[in-house]
Length: 340
Image (cartoon, rainbow, N blue to C red; front, side, top):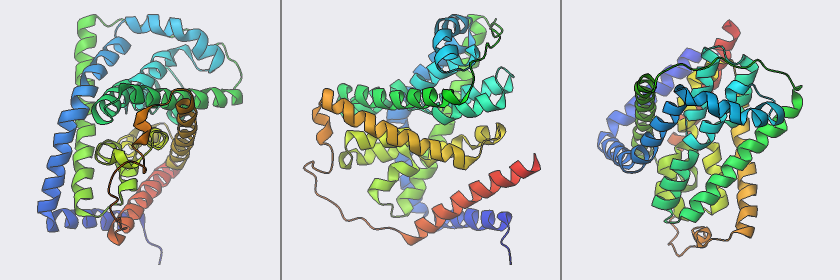
């Protein structure tokens, strides 16, 4: 008998609910830790920068940036001029800025579906605030390490954008329409957008922290599920190239936040996932090479660090839960795609 997608969803959701109820004390403790960590690191480092970035992208200053970046955007990346600010702010703004700006361009019909897919293949980045300030300065206690991580993840994204451009002919895209929002209107719009985005990120961090506190997750796998808590709590067991790769992958928590955008533009989640993995591998390699040129003591935060190794074990319930979750996502996207 064929198992329907709805039945798998029901099992998955009931399993999650039962876990949260049965282990409410552990879930509450994990949720509190996630909320505290988000309030201490994520919100202060991300929210102010996100407001400014969206203010610039919504105000008339956006037009200047797109014009300045147009030679690089149109001639090298072979993308429409209108994508210039989305690429620029996506690289420096942090998850999920690039994807949300891509969604905005697609919704406003400034770009077509194929261009939106191209952007989502590389425009998912940790950003300057999260990588340099939060990860480098706050967690690793080294701004230099944060800069190297940011440079490697950003270079990997731009390399993907450049390599993928060879599939497309050089096209003379029309000059986009100009934004006419006043500074006050743009500030209100960007503040509302940024608060929603940060609250969304915080909610996912709290949820994943609650679940991870119930189930035994091997430490090296935590950043794969939730990047912020995974790096903050376990950075000592990773080398800088490994951290760079994990930051580029972004974590399934970020993936879940972007599912609505991925579905909206008609992109397969498997396609998105494979490009995250490719970005991760490239970022690892670039970071490794950068450390040869700019060595930093932070690189010893690896398995060679003076830390007592803790035994790790794989929890069968977690594995089944995560596999079911991934199956639900893929089946849901495939089902909706067939209805288009």
